[in-house]
Image 1 (tube, one colour):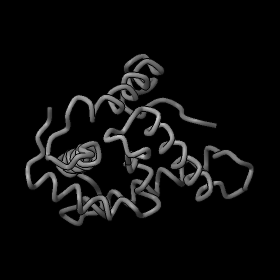
Image 2 (image 1 turned 60 degrees about the horizontal axis):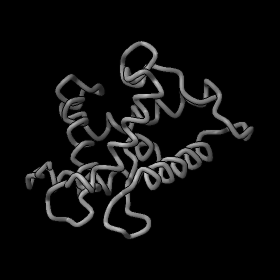
Image 3 (image 1 turned 30 degrees about the vertical axis):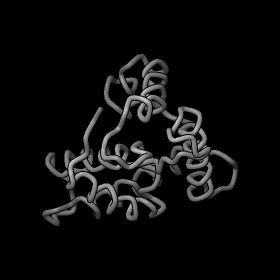
Image 4 (image 1 turned 90 degrees about the vertical axis):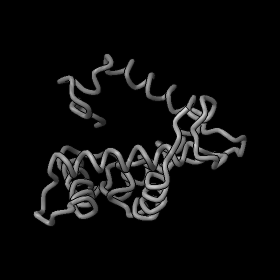
Length: 160
C-alpha cells in the first residue's frame, strides 16, 4: 500500500484542476470509479482512455477523416509538451530540465495515486490499485515490456 503525504495530496488536488485543460488532459488520464463500487477497474480505465482518445481525435483531427495523421499527432504532441512546459517550467527558461521533468512525473504519479484512492483514506490499497496494475501489465505485454519500440517509454509508433 502506498501512503500519500500531505504535499502529494495537495499537489494531486491542484493538478486535477489544471489537468482539465484540453492539451494536457491527454497526458494524464483523469480516472474515476464509474460504477461506484469503490475501485477503479481495468475496464473503467479502458473506457476513460477511449473517451479521451475520442476527445483527442475531435480536437486534433483537422482534416476530419476520423484518424490522426502524422502531422496531426505531431501537433497534439507539441500541444501536450507546451502545456507541460507551461505548468512545470519552474525556472521559466521555456524548457523542462531533468529536475522539472522528474517533478512532472512525480506530480503525475501523485495525481494517479489520489485518483486511485477512491475511499480517500490517504492509502492506495491493493484492491484500489488492481485495475491500474492490470492495465499496466497489459500494456507491457503489447510492447514487449519495453514501453516502446526503442526500449524507451513512448518510443513506439502509436495509432494511425
